Structure formats: C-alpha cells, structure tokens
Length: 435
Image (cartoon, rainbow, N blue to C red; front, side, top):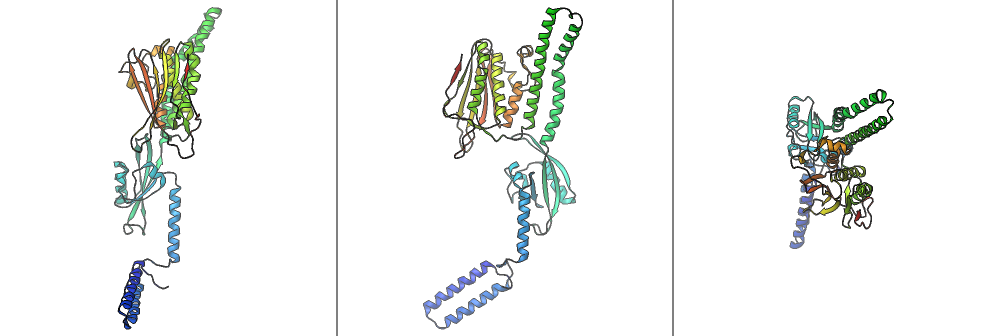
C-alpha cells in the first residue's frame, strides 16, 4: 500500500461509515447508499494523503527497531551501572545495574531524585557546556559505604528527545574492592607491627637468655619454653584474627546469598563450647522456640560471630554463673521482614557505660592486662561488627556494673519462597542445657 495511514484516522473513517450506514437503513432513502460510498471515499482519501506512523512497517523501520533491541540487550548485560540523561538531566534510560544501585531511579524523572551528588550533577552540566568528557567520584553510605568512579561523556543522538542535542551518558565503575584492598594493606601493616612487637620482643629476649645464662639450667629452660609457646600462640591468634577481619571487610559491600538457619549455628557453637564452660563451672544453655530461623548469610562468618560472643562471655563472666544463648523473633509492621535476635547473656562483672560505644574498635580493651591474659586479641567485636554490616544486621550491647552483660545480634529474617526451605533446618529443635 503506498503512503502511510494513521490508525486513529482510519478508525474515524470507519466510524463515520457506520453512522451513515445506520442513517440509510433508518431513512430508507435510495440515494443514501451513494452518499455513504462517496463520504467513505473522501475520508479514506484524506487519511491516505496524511503522513503518520506506517501501517505497513518498512525495512528501514524494521532495521531501526532491531538496532534498538540490540542496544537494549547490550545495555542490560553491562555489569556496571550505566545511565543516560538528556539536557535537562532527566533520565532517558538506565540498565539493571544502575537500577539496583539507585532504587529511586525512574525514567522521565530528574536524576537528582535518585543520585544526590553535587559533584556528579555539576559534572553533567560541565559536559553539556563543553562537550568534553570528565571523571568524578561518587560515594554511597547506605547500606554500606561504596566508592565509584563516574565517567561522564556527551552522546549526540539525532533520533532522541531534544531535537538532536547531545545527551549525557554516565558510566559508574565500582572502586570499592580496590580501595578496601589498599586500606586492608595499610591497616594490616600498622596493626600487625603494633600488636606483634610485644610478643616478638619477649621471644627474642627468652631466646637470648636460653643461649646465654640459662643454657645449662633445665628448670629455667622449661619455664621459658612454656612462655615462648604461649607468646607464639598469641601471635598466631592475632594473625588469624587480622586476616579474618580483612577478608570480611573486603566483602563487606557484597551481601550473602546462602540461606542458613541461625538456630543450627547457635546450637553448633554451644555444643563446641560446652566442655570449656564445664571446666570453668559455668552453665551454658541454649533457649530457642520451635520454629526455624532462616537468614541470608555466610555460614562461616555467622559461626565466627556467635563464637566470638560466647567466648567473650566465657572469658569475662568469671567462675561459675550462667551464660544463656537465646533466639527470638520480632514481627515488624508493613512490608519489612521480621527481625531475628540472637542474644548472649552472662552474669559477669559488667562493663562501665563509657566503654560500651568503643567496644567494637580494633584493639580496644576495657582491661588490657586481663584481656591478654585470657588470650584475647582485641579484635573479636570488630569482627562481629563488620560481619553484621555485611549481613545488614545490628549489634546491641547492654551492660550494668555487677549485673552482667547482654549482647544482641539482630538480623532480618529471610522470607522463604514456596517450596524453599532454609539450609540445615531441623524439624524440631529442643533447648539444650550443659552443666
């Protein structure tokens, strides 16, 4: 069919034809049939003479649509966030990675609604004026800190809104892992050199003593070798904790995807620490209702979290007493998932209020001598804090002098889909108590 036909006009012509046909039937006038045919011919001719969207798709239109489909597929498979905006800095297109990074990003809405960064917005204005590409930085703070390098460039497209004026494309490159690696390297060198200095000095001193004055003293040799062994173990624990903390910090911005049962993790750790509790005359108990406790988590990291909390309670609870590990579930209103709480409560001497805000700092100790005597490295709660950051959880510490301490881990409950069960859930879990 030559030319192009607007569907709306053709529909109007058809409607007019129906109206005339009905009038002819009602009036019974012989000339109405001719008038009907002439009216339809005039309307159809007018429609055929107008330009508009083609009813028959031309090869050029097919090619244009294919190119657009290929461009959309390429954009969707780019792993880094990509955003296209026009001269008004209104979002034209964005790939799935950009939508995941900026949940508030919407098409035909200003970019500033979702990305509130003066450096990026000013950079777009500069590119629109100069046409030269530039790079700037963008840092997110929620839910965890992430750093991006934003490459901004002009993209002239003749067939896009704006009359052929250049649009602007933003390419965000994630630098979080690289920066965490650099920070980890610097922190590891600083912390290791500081904390390893004392045990290394002790080892060097005892070695010199054994090579000199105590060379022929069996009693002194046995005593010094025992101290050297203790210092070597301390260095091993310190290095293990530093490496563990560094690994957790490196992946802190990547949420875990495995479904695990918090109740089974707590049960396993209580069973492992039961002999140590019995040696110290402490009653270690697990209190958990029957339902499972599914969370999205890294099993090894959550085991380390519970292990550090239980070990801290065993170290500082004193001889005798009770340590209770309990699980609970708190429903929340609206669409937010329920909160699962794992609490470790002891009956120890408690912690003064001024120390509580600093307990998760690296190498912070309320009593340095007591901590080192107990084998502590000062990194346990720092590991707990960063592991919970990765799991989008929270740590709450409550303590009173002479009334004990309660440490709570709060994690969002995983909402199971139909037919999906959390990994490692037992049908019925009963409370355990170890004397």
